[in-house]
Length: 123
Image (cartoon, rainbow, N blue to C red):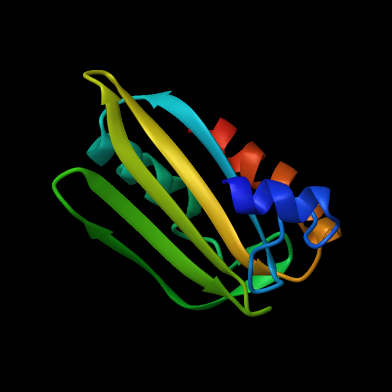
């Protein structure tokens, strides 16, 4: 919001940097299908993976749901975390949002963004 814009303008924070000093990236895509179908497609796409971007998955990925949302979460061995949020946008489309948090630099965002955009493009 306004505080972030001010801090960036004043040189106190760079784009992608959180108030705690780490970095995060967010990307999204609208895809055909409802939230349950899209979650199932995502699970088929990433379910057998042991790594993303050359970084090993730490533990098991998890899913959860509410009436409006479907979630997929995973921690990576470099200490970062990925969350995918899926909700119905229209009767035949869903919005998939991906957030990768606890990154250590703006350069790391530049490394990860195309990896996640490529995966979302496969939905």
